Image 1 (cartoon, rainbow, N blue to C red):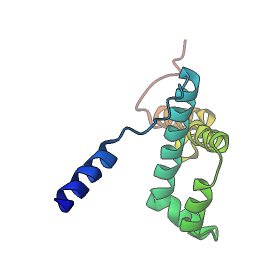
Image 2: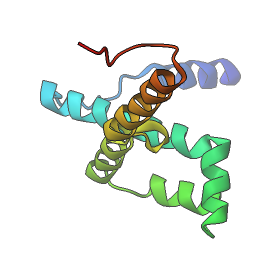
Image 3: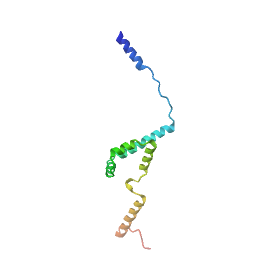
Image 4: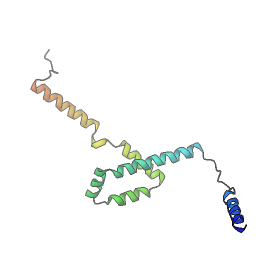
Length: 121
């Protein structure tokens, strides 16, 4: 009789409702949390790349230390860093560089005679 009483009491204690935190989250708060998590994912993904780790080592920075420091950044700092990463040109190529290379290729093709851009009138 005594063990069944303990089992019944245990079930009552476990099944007892507990108060839940029912604070409402505004849309702006939810969006801010989502943007922060996306920014953290972008920074983590960048730091996980092998070429970035090699560059950090070449600069004398331990990649693990860089990852730990990135984790300790605040939400606004992470978003700012992720924005800089996304705005940076890939491979350091600029629009002026692309136009310069295009001009040189066209000039070489003109001089070799493959194309005829500068017609004599």
